[in-house]
Image 1 (tube, rainbow, N blue to C red):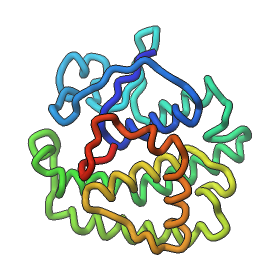
Image 2: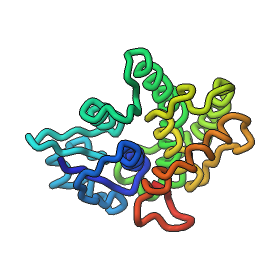
Image 3: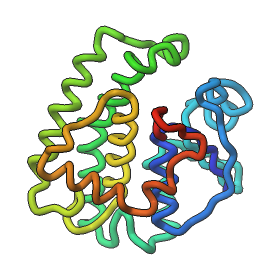
Image 4: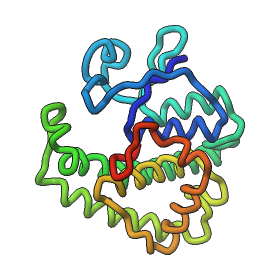
Length: 216
């Protein structure tokens, strides 16, 4: 296997997952700021032009961080970061989807259309007029999620799962690009600090992350 890695939130979710699993994969760094992922030879491996990507020994390329985490969980089920039963896996996936669809996709697109506009306006369709609304929706949905976490140590209850990894990394990224969430929220604020204290949180930061820069 070869991991195509980058300084970006989605690749960081996979790095944090790997740290929690105790797995090490050979990797090659892709310069997404220079647009290396939008050119050949990267596109020969992953025509979607996205990071992370995982090249398998038979030449297959897997992309999408969540799909890669699901694949690695099947190969290395211990420690479980999705679940050991159908119910546990469904609960972890439910919370990951709630976080992604309601919060992190809005953060991501708002960054494309505002703070990251100069970087993305020549690569993808952008809608700067939508940025403020997307940020407002993300903050509303963060408060919505907070209200459901009473009595939870982690998103899926007492278990730490890939849903926690996904939301933590994206909220940490959001904070670094001018989209902080309200740390006074009674459940999500302590949850964020709880996840940040895990060794994998610091270990998963890209080595080239600079103070005051994008965290990924």
